[in-house]
Image (cartoon, rainbow, N blue to C red; front, side, top):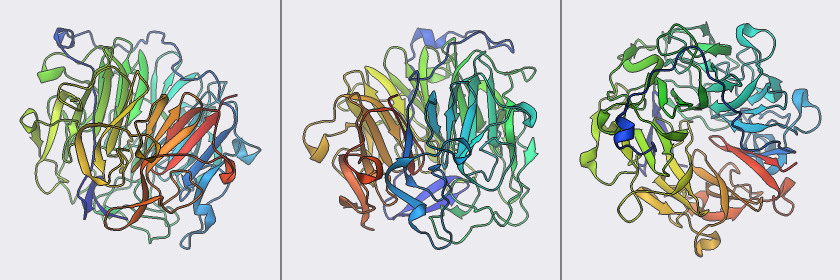
Length: 544
């Protein structure tokens, strides 16, 4: 496995230096330059945004080091056993560990945790909870079975939820009335509650593993069974919220409303409003907020040993291309580690944030800027303003119906789904996660995902999901296909080996799509209605 050193939440990949963070933002011509009014604290009614009306039995596979599979088991540390991985799909437990989870409205994955919306519009969560990201009013031990997300103030239940957004160690929710809520880590103001200090503290106890899900300087992504890595001596207790908080309106006087969708990156968040504009908050050291600067609008400094970094403690509008007006006509968002994607209603894709490893789908470096992050040794290529993602052979990527990226620390590549059912990807490719039949450093321009065995191209796809170093595609026939790294069973092949070896460390992987096996490795997984992908785990919901 490539050694991944983390500075703050940055990944330094030794041996095959590559990392992708891409973005896509709705196209911008004259319409993008128009400046609509800022949203008020009085929300408009928005419809539910779940992709399916109902989901049957829910299963999971991949890494279970932090109980993110929800199967009722916890990893045996420091000597990992079979319960630290699930190599083929298996049942997710029902609430409290009873039976199998079924009948939920939607599923969402964070970096090392998972969430689901129930039919009554309350929320379940399970997995890592070191920063209160489960939203059950506690921090600390992980939960291997689904628990209920409590209501604002820590009482009752969070309800009327229409859609969720999972960040690396924080979560976002839209209520039926269009109001935005957030909980979990807030060290870089990614909750949008007007502060990066508080609103609560989650002091790190000796029983809580410090690993790649937490945004800490000078830490290494901890694999299962490795020793704990402590936060730097003298740093403050972690800023977080253990239950949902209201995301502020831009003026800080009310709650952000008229929200259609929310997405979370490693340390930033983005909201799509009903008027087609995009608003962001959190860390901005690489321009991931898309506001035309990487040095503000505010400053956050959680660590005494590091300088302050640009951030925003409440929502700010993403600017239009060239920094003029506001980005508009957007209909979908995705967030990577330190970049943001947006899909415009005309089918074009736009991106902003870090381009340190050709993350923004650009082939012309003159279009980009240099961002000087206090956590990077030298200034890195970035864009603080939306750039249109290029096409595979010149021109621009078009006719796109969905985009995907992973907000966890290793979410460094991106995918786009075309209306013709084909899949396109770009960015880091050291583990074959682009699915083009190769293991290489990266691809700056989108490449088409090939078919199984490298024959032809993958077609008939209805949904896509990006993981830390792997990718998932759901076909319209209900079958699931995967490619990329397989060292923790991410590909659902009932093995942690092959079918190929990637990089000079000979890490198990597949550079072309392979079909996910059935429950407990028997047959093939079929009749799937929805998928959700974390840093190194996958959740699938059957058709009811």
